[in-house]
Image (cartoon, rainbow, N blue to C red; front, side):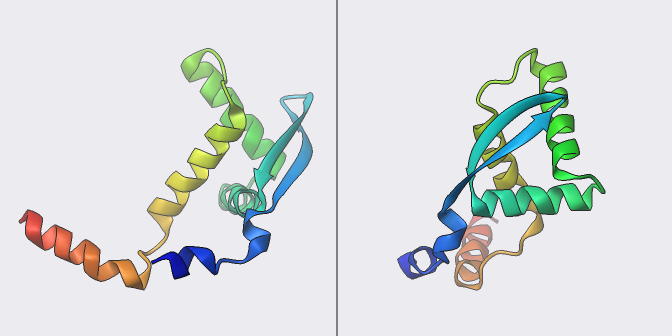
Amino acid sequence: MCHLFAHQPQRDYESQTRSLRIDGHCTSIRLEIAFWDTLEEIAARESMSLGKFLTTLYNEVLDHHGEVNNFASLLRCSCLIYRSRNMAPVQEFKSAVTAILDAAE
């Protein structure tokens, strides 16, 4: 199992700081490149620029919770949710998932 994680491209977990405008305010966000790639993919699927997508998400969180705590962590978790719903399980884990589901029946 560690082979799967240890052999991922180093580029994916290098961090990158980007300066952006969210709802007209300048800010910087530091995330791993894999998360930036995923956010760009999500924005494209929504037919938005990355800045527009982040502004929309920020405003929706603000409307729902009244404040936005740790936006970078929110973005990482959003990417994980997106990936978990849009990616097929890795082949090595398919049999384990099947076994768990069979045992639950």
